[in-house]
Length: 77
Image (cartoon, rainbow, N blue to C red; front, side, top):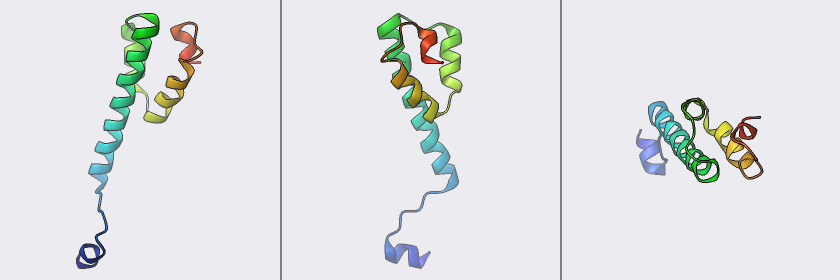
């Protein structure tokens, strides 16, 4: 502990890391849901649930696909 304090090393516990990852996932889900609503109208409950269950990396992929999607289903292919 003294060494970490001397070196001023940031320490992130595994619980904090999980919280950060969950926060990232929630933020990315909120952005994608907003994009869908703006482009296609309000998302269905099924779409909403699928997005809420996805991990952050998948959400990033889907957020890129919305740019060329002609239908909501195109996002998830």
